[in-house]
Image (tube, rainbow, N blue to C red; front, side, top):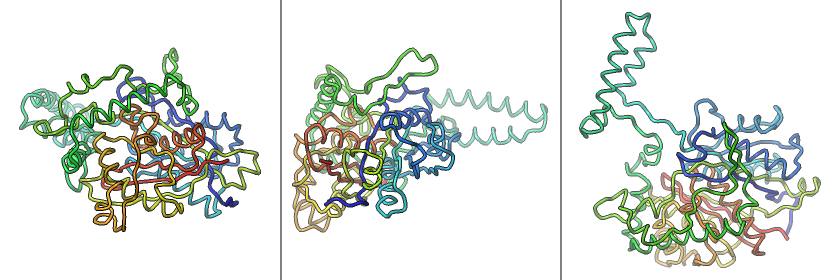
Length: 447
């Protein structure tokens, strides 16, 4: 039954997604967020003065835009009076922004919130090793050339040691720069990276390399078909690439037309080179992109003359062992379904983030397992089957990409657009979260 305080999704927009180091590598995450937000405002003909708050997810936290939500909002044309803040829940940061908006609107505190996420993983910095940083610290405090010149010579010697560190493993930690995105994708509690957690799941659930590669191939095939047929175009804002402004991105850059099992089979395991099965081909790429959604209370949307796409029925977050973080959706989905008053049998479409093929396949098996439900979730029976034909029907992150701070919103946006096309009533967006969590959101299409 409709309620004045229902939280409805009026519209959503995202940028094209691009593999890091490619088309969007020079674009500041503020600029990506601005482009998506301006397009959202234009498509909805929104009076920006009615926006109560802007909430943006981000994990890279650029040093020149620490509260990136505020910077995006002002650059997008939101008035100075509109408050804005940034949220961070690793892979679910942009779903966290939606949950914050939901709570503020549902409670009656606010009526109009723009929520989303932006991330340029290409621009996550390279960190100096401790010994070289110590030299820079002294250099910043140097008084005059007499103190600075010896330190500059010391830096020159350190550069030579960096080169040697490339060839000498025992010097690497002391002199070789740290790639921050790799460090960020390593769990500090258990000391292993996300790919290694996927290896654990692949072994525990008996997933073959062939099964993972076949899933990855399917992701590309579905994404390529969706792109060619223009099914994703309505959710994407054309992106004119600066600084030359000679090229406009209209579609995601990740899907590979012509991807094959043969090509995937040639890739070597990346995280466990001896006995592993997780490769760059059956994992999501590091990605750049942004996405935003306009949330309103039902009464406000009606007063402004909007016809919403969907309403949020419920959401949930849950924790689990960090080394099995990929199973997070199986833990958070029962929470979201209970709050929504639904079961998995009611769900007609699912967007489950493809961090790794092994992770998605493991989730599907765990969702459909009575034993897992009883032993791990404290439930009397399984959560319910997630059928192949309803999951990621336009491809997933293995093909489209996973800009960590934006994916949570992209999942919900893609879901509600496809629900509208297929006349599906209930949908689920869910993802695993680095550190051992899961996030889920249940939405209902508006008639």
